Length: 235
Image (cartoon, rainbow, N blue to C red):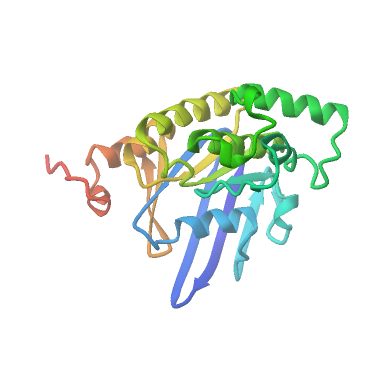
């Protein structure tokens, strides 16, 4: 379970406030205008930013002051953050050991994840030798080898063309189902959001403006859909 209690964070003059609860295995889409605080919400959960007040509970434990590397979360950004001078195998291996000294069990874990994301033939290549979709697969694999129960995605597929984005969404859904991951994904694409998550959070000016069914936003059934540029059904 993931729980944020009265979490307060100030960015410039905007006071952000988050209070929410997410069950283990839930998939949540985080939507909203640019600059609304969507990425900040993920960063507060991951520990990359620190709240002024409130608490962060992950898997039933208080992680408010826990360093990012010790929290039970993995985070994937829009920029895949692969190291250009390391092979794909080495980049993925960093998720298991910062010095890349992997024991036999870690090697086995790496091979399993690599197989799952279909990168077996790319392990000796450098990131520049891969397509955009393959690089994002490698970045996702680096998250998955850490085997944390909570996966945070900050617009990870927005730079990909529709076919590759679709491919990644299929893979993501498969991985979440197999591993029973709790997923929070920031997206500007409503159709992607509806496909991957039943529940959506609409963040506006640093607050959760809507917490409910993703399809209701996409279909314009609720008035909050207008914030996302959707035509609201008045009937």
